[in-house]
View 1 (cartoon, rainbow, N blue to C red):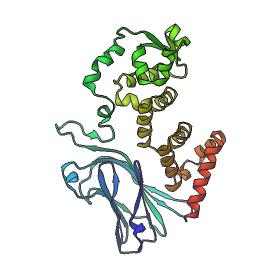
View 2: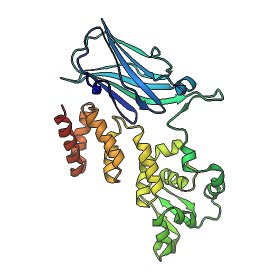
View 3: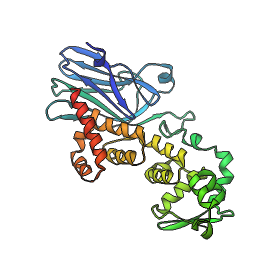
View 4: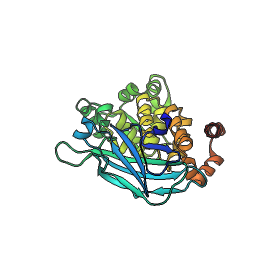
Amino acid sequence: MSDSAYKVETTSRLAQWRIDNLASCTYRKSDPFKIGKWNWHLSVEKNKVLFVKLYPEISNLTRENPPIASFVIRVVCSVGDRNTLTHPEITDKQLKSNDDFVWQIEVPLTGKFIIDVEFLDLKTASPDGGEPCSIWAEGFGKKQSNATALASLGRMLTESIHTDIRINASDGSIGAHRAVLAARSPVFESMFAHDLKEKELSTINISDMSIEACQAFLNYIYGIIQHEEFLVHRLALLRAADKYDVADLKEACHESLLEDIDAKNVLERLQSASLYQLPKLKTCCMRYLVKFGKIFDIRDDFNAFMHCADRDLIAEVFHEVLNAWKGF
């Protein structure tokens, strides 16, 4: 049996293991694959029924910080109508050994099939005994700002201390500081350096942003944005980062959008990746749709996408589909 028979393909939160013709009385264990902090294994055992297991690789990390996982696992027949068996969603289940999650499937499976695992969240126990912490939320503040150093700067925004310019959003306005905006954005710096209307009137019109999204944009610039606020406004922040050339915000949005691609958002994110030239996001969306076969699960949405998306982007999708077909 070739090495590829044990390989699990992964993207940000999705893992797929392709199984070819599993004979009776057979046990097979996948190669390790990494999702989050842990290496994982899938295993299948076929006797009278099929047993599917998901578990983390035994290591010091697993012993000291076993994952608390939320996920959806499916078995997809990869021929014909792609019939799918779906296990009820698993929520906040701690996995330490290969016996902690076992799925017994009594429906007979023949031919090729895919084991598809979509990780919804991974948590670790809090060291102080509090609520478990998601690994995909931790570290956000550390990466974006030093809270202590930026506390005074944040107060300048939240308490409107000596503001000298107004930002007019679509449904409200916020006071800000030219020096801070100019230091964070070369576009704002150019506005204030030349005799433009923004400098003369002490206002900047951002009519394509709501007041909430605009506040989130300024909160990021001043270093006081909260993680949930960032997640809610990611696409608006991406648009603003591109428009005002805030490179670190654009990259933060890019990396965040990679983390939770699913069937509901993949087409919107693919269009954003194309519009804002985000190569990693485009590649991940293409893989999710084509290599992982999710294009079959969103036929209606994809048909609507075909009528409104950029022609060049549609051509790229079809090119990926054709390449995938050549591989079968």
